[in-house]
Length: 401
Image 1 (spheres, rainbow, N blue to C red):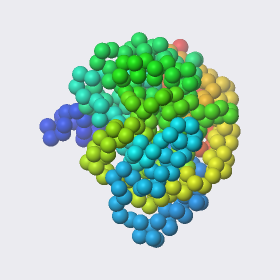
Image 2: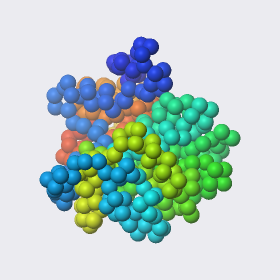
Image 3: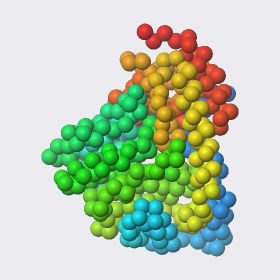
C-alpha cells in the first residue's frame, strides 16, 4: 500500500480551479501517520521532528517583554535590525569570515527561507540535484515550478553519506542548483568538510548555485566541529545558506528563520519575501536576539540529552531484527533500512496499528528509500525504551523473506 492512497486532499483532485502545478506537492506522509495516530489510544511517537525540551527562559521572557512593550508592528522587510546585527556578529565569529546584516534576511521559519530560495531559482527546463532521501520540501517545490530533479541516492550501510563524485557526475549543462542538507533530515548524516569542498569547488567553477539547509547545525555529536558551507567558501556568490532557531532553541512554533547569501541575492529575495509573508513575527524576532545573546548553556545541555538518546536508539536498533542501522552524527533522527524489497509503508502502518508505535515511512523522503523508516528521538528516554519494548518483539515475529 502506498501512503498516498490513504486519503485524497482537495489539491490532489482534478478540479480545474486548482493550478495543475499543485499536483507536484505530495500529501506529507508525516501528517498522514500522525493523523492516524491521533485516532488511537496509547500511541508512542518516534515520528515528531521537533524538540520536546522547553525553550530557554530568557527566550520566552524576551517574547513576552516585546509583546508588553508594544512590539507588535511590522519590522523592516529584511528583519529586525537588532536580530540582523546579532546574526551577522554570531556567524562572523563562528566561521571567522566577515558578514554584514546586508547578507541576511529574516523569514517565517526555515520553511519560508527554503521556499524562497528554491522557487526563486526553479523554472521550466532548469535542472537540480537533490540527495535521496531528503527533507520532503526540496524536490516537490522544484518540480512545482517546472524544475527537473536528479536524486543522488545514499544508503544506510554507508551512513547515508553523500558521494561528492556522484553529485559532480550528475551535473548537466542546464543544472542551476545543488541542494544540500547537513545534518540531514531524515538521516542525521553530517557531510564532512571534504565532501562540501569538492561540491562547492565544482559548483563555483560552473556557476551553479548551492542551497544549503543547515537547520540542525548545533545538533552535532561526539565533540565534532560542524562543517558548514560558510566555512568552506571564499565568497557568497552562488551560495544560499538557510537556518533557524527552531531546533537549536526549541523555538519551532515561533517561526523565525533566515537566509544568508550575497548582498545582491538578498536584495532580490527581500522583494520576493514582501510578496509571501511580508515580515517574520516581531516579538519572536526579539526572542531570537535573546537566544543569540544568552550563552551556550541551553545548547550544551540539550546536546548532552540528545546524545544519550542517540546512543540508546542506536543500541536498540542494533537489537531489532530486520533493521540495518548506523550511528548518526547530527540532528535527532535515525533512518534504518528494512530488508531489500520490504515495503516500509506497510511496516509503518502495521507497526502503528498493532503496537501503537508511530514512525514515518521512508517513501516520505524520496524514491529510493521505500524500505526504510524514520525514527525521531526528540522524545524522552523512557518513551524510547517503551517504544522498543513493543517494536523488538513485533519485529521478531515478522517473516520478510
